Image 1 (tube, one colour):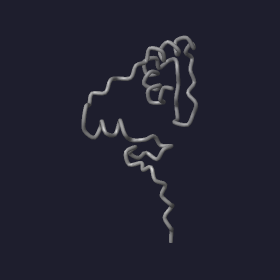
Image 2 (cartoon, rainbow, N blue to C red; image 1 turned 90 degrees about the vertical axis):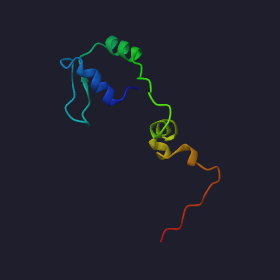
Image 3 (cartoon, rainbow, N blue to C red; image 1 turned 180 degrees about the vertical axis):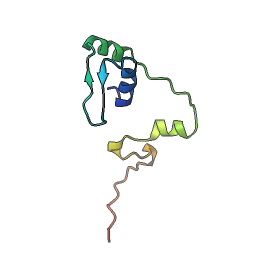
Length: 86
């Protein structure tokens, strides 16, 4: 799946073919499905240019939002009870 940001960047190459006015409004295309499929098939993410440091740590160990956006190495294997809230 292509991100909304990447999709909008791709649309910028052909501004007369698509419109997007507001963040929550659907994007309307006048682009043939074959063109969209060809672009998605040829899309390759840019290679990462870091071997160490915080950016690499973040890219390789931060979990997705549905998993809590925390570092995967902080996950324990012992179930902890919920703390008492006063």
